[in-house]
Image (cartoon, rainbow, N blue to C red):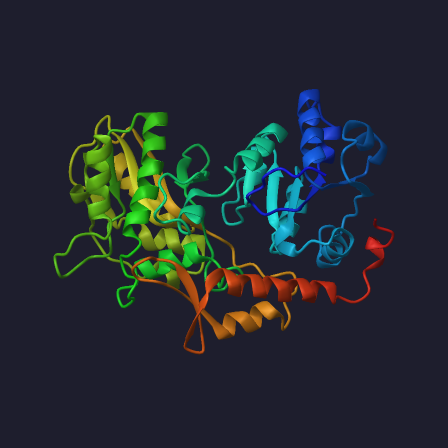
Length: 421
């Protein structure tokens, strides 16, 4: 079978799109899907096998969907049948519950849905979200499927890097604040954190004792600039600032002051950074366990000392977690007269999810023995293993081989999966 150039490294696409059978999906979309399947190995899971056979005859397999799918047992069968690893599988569906289940794996997750409510949970961001089948096909074929920040971090010298942004919304209904993000942040409790260099870079870049402190500023500036350019085109922004740091006693500049200033000059925006102040300090947000606590923690901490009447502001910050800090920034800017505020962040914080095999697995052993790092000059990632530096991709590939082996060693499958393939 002729293979398309899929930069995602995907060798098998698993589709569960029964919503399209029950909807008025344009025939041209399903024709496009069949064309895609003629170029890529694809399995269709469905309650309507004969209907899908007629619509997409080029799929390599059709199987009855079961409510337990996807699962580690199901993934084992995929790997045995198609000779693929977990990193080479993509789960594609219009069913949010199906895709949420897939988030417990190391496989690619794609949702095709026009329902914005169904994909609004920014604490569980998928690899790719598209409104249409054709949008999915274009993203994969054009390689424009990766979040800009997550791709650029591995190609720091390339400019520009093909990639996409995500859009989240925070605030109460009727007062929704858009937040443009360049990637996802996996905290130390998330099973993907020990492999995610983008999350590592965000942490280390603001850690004052780290030899990587501030080393990623150039990359982050390029990300913020790309986001700001996009926002300016959409809303006609005319001013920019960032969330100020906690109250300083050394009269030093805010961490993002230089970045804001350079973006302002580049895009002909007014730099209002020096006018947004933190008027009182608050405990670290890390100590606040709930979204309610975080909002109470930040309430009344920011103030703008000039009139912003009629201004349309871009507000920068590094992470979106509960949204409390950005909501407070929005409040302060609005009270100063701002007409509109759109936020831009490097990443959205992801829910601390467990891997499917959450017992004593290779990933737990790996996270305890290997320590991620980056070259302070080239920014190339690598791993420390008992004091020895090791190639990043080689180590990751070896880990995935171990994870594949663990899946294949799973015992007898559940009765719900009997008869597959």
